[in-house]
Image (cartoon, rainbow, N blue to C red):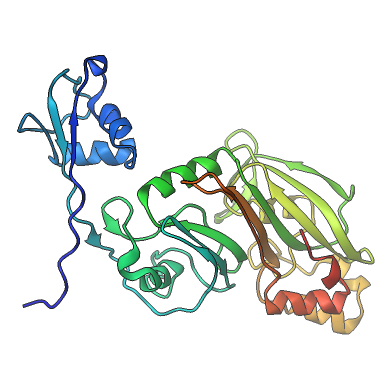
Length: 334
């Protein structure tokens, strides 16, 4: 016999269809009436047989609503998430019943994937939240609204409930937020502030990389300004995303021949500006083991209360040490 406690039952939603709802799609009507489940989630529940009309099981999300009918949506209890809880430390900047804001350290993969099935941020969040996690999509798991690459550090927000997930996802899709990165790149961009625009897609020469491509990529726009520099060898930039493509900052800067210091994917040869540095500085930057990119600031409206929230984090110790060597630590603020 298992000693695992039974999962808490999910709430059952009972709705009497008013006359004004006649002819509406069933999934849209139920999602609007319930208010805490996304339409896609309601659609999936209907297709799985968890909805009834006057006691008759329904499986067609597009069925027109019948006025006066009694609809019941009974989601199953959330299942334990497939990823297992793991006690992995991470810094929490803010937490409430709806969301958690954290400072992701470099080297931590966000979500389990082939080759990284364990030891991820999701495993850590499941362990941290425990039974306080209502769940997303019928599983007791955190809602990953956005991701940072394994070796990128900085501020992230994670949803703890389905309504928070829907609201935060919409805010990220609409870019209705304040997000800024610190990026240490080779060379000195000219102009010192500007925009980098170029569609991003798979590199036709290396499918593991992204690249600025013409005709078949997704539109991408990065805004940057130079916060400081060491001669013409290296510059510290503030970057802001108008779009959110995979590796966007890394790809855009590399396309201008200003790749990030330490980038294992987009820095393929010894950068010429490295010759302008003293030998100790040159070695410190060439030996930096990851892309020098930090998500320093994230601001958004709380998904339930609408209250503005803003969080900033300093660069992690490895990047902070390099910035001190370069004399750029004091300007590393966004």
